[in-house]
Image (tube, rainbow, N blue to C red):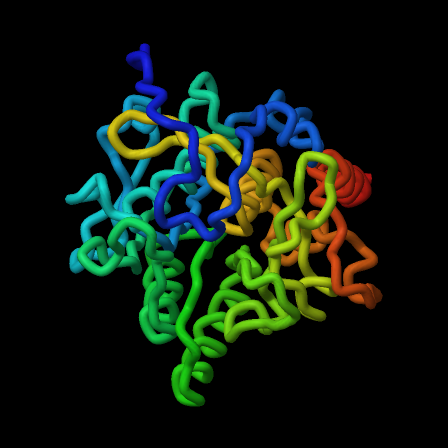
Length: 320
């Protein structure tokens, strides 16, 4: 039985991608907005479904991560935090809590029985309080390939990358091509610049780009919009989402980093319910059949129940 959590303050934690004040959202309300409740009732995920978390290290001593199946991908970067005060540790733990935290924790805890493959790309020594964790395109591309080779079937990229050189962008393209070839779905945060634009990650046609919305489903003003997000992406809750934080605390975080795990978690639940389904089918089910014909900059809201129904219909049709 998890020990009681220290609440700490509920201001936005250092290292999140927005400084705008936000009220904590009820996790159930956020999950209901994107109709993940019916999937959560059916499964808590499967240990055979491995999510690659390419982010910061985790506060693995958190009582609501104690039961999670967490594996380190890299021998060069530790999956456990060495400094609970670092922005890298806070960011990684918040995202992990949304995915594999305990269901009674108060975090979204979408797929707690899935396996989490942790590949840190944020250095704690370089992410002091108040700084947004960043990483180079080269490092993220390397992490993508390593995490796929470690067995991930879904990748979560809640990252901001530095502006790449032509060579680095080509390497990123090759890493994402590798994900597509292996059928590994890539979910990436759109960014929080509040502008129109894309990155070496979100421009790739295989990537599901996620923007953040409020509890009414309205896009947040600081979400970065793009044609790639509009055509192939989704919107998900990203305002004041309460999750797990270092030192056994709960904190809200906001922005597209908070929104991306809802899409990643939904895919992990679908993969758990339909284990034989290839990545392309799952990706089509969650983005919707109209994705190739979209022309708007703002993508539709994630709809977990509709994705489940599409997969159920496909399975029934294949069995008939």
